[in-house]
Length: 243
Image (cartoon, rainbow, N blue to C red; front, top):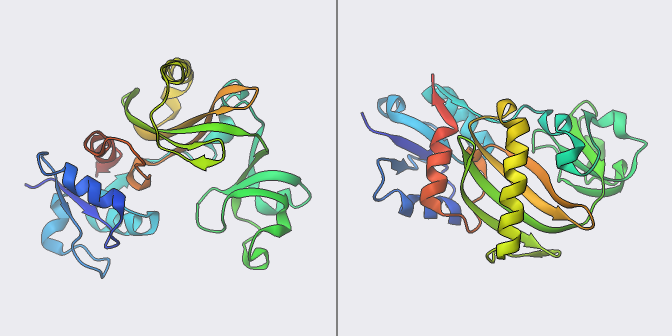
């Protein structure tokens, strides 16, 4: 039996880096074809997928995979001790009167996440399902944002991706590393039991508030930034479970 990881037909820098990282690994990364269909003869050998969420869900159904991901409302259940901001979860229509808030659709598909002065400022608002579920939070100023690929309560690889309103993957300072790992340890002691064993956690520094959890994402569709692709690959494999 082969250990195949299905890649999206779309070529991206991340998928190309994972492909290179797999050369000396026990995994075979395969794009198959552009018809979004895994041939029958390979389905039993597909143990994981890495792609955008729509393709991943199709592959999971064809190859009998369970895609591990946080519960839709999980971010709203995290203590403010770790989020450093008030976060609510509910239907879009219940937030219609809120102003100057950060809002993100829980299924990542309906509209672009961001800060909106009014909910009706969402592009294509009239076509968005008012019953779709969203996260809303007060607006904060992030000074640094870091992506962490986590497996069994351990950060396997990490990369900054945003610093002072600019895309930035430069290494963290020693002080930043120590601060992040200390915060991570405290966070996992209280929250590990509520999260998948393989997951991507984004942490950051909020101006005048310190380290905080930004969000939790599935490893099978998360971008790598400057993370070690070989180490990220192990987390991605762990985020897909064969039924």
